[in-house]
Length: 202
Ligand SMILES: *[C@@H]1O[C@H](CO)[C@@H](O)[C@H](O)[C@H]1NC(C)=O
Image (cartoon, rainbow, N blue to C red; front, side, top):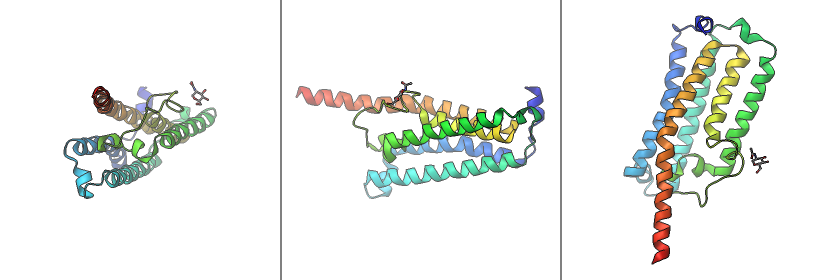
């Protein structure tokens, strides 16, 4: 562990820029989505059209994700490589992680659609029923796990301890995001169920 830390160049600004973008993204979409839920900021921006608001947020989050990935790649490029991480078995492991991570991300986007993937629930665009098939029968948060696995895959592929540290940060950022998101979206759907139940009684 100590030896891995010695192979991280903490003086490189690219490392910190990457760290900031990793923390920024989920923070940004959670704050924006809550603003939408409480004050309809994006829906209003698009003249009351919740779908346009959600699509705009989707494009923004998607773009921020690409920028975050590029900043991560750039940070890794100049970081030291650890000899132990150049073990030949790690390359196929990295490839497998990258592939399965992307399968999780892409299949969950496919299952949820654009509005389901990009926080449509906060716009009042709810899924009819909870998606329970693949990849949601493997993990409750396939998008987050898939993304974390891709970060880990790059760290292992290039043999960079800094990549392992940044992957840990990705994991932590998503962990915190889920603590905010899960109970909140659960309550959005519980509210609909209560409304439906009340509707049936009348
Ligand atoms: C998840 O669902 C898919 C297809 O619906 C199935 O092939 C797979 O075996 C399931 N996985 C688990 C862990 O249940």
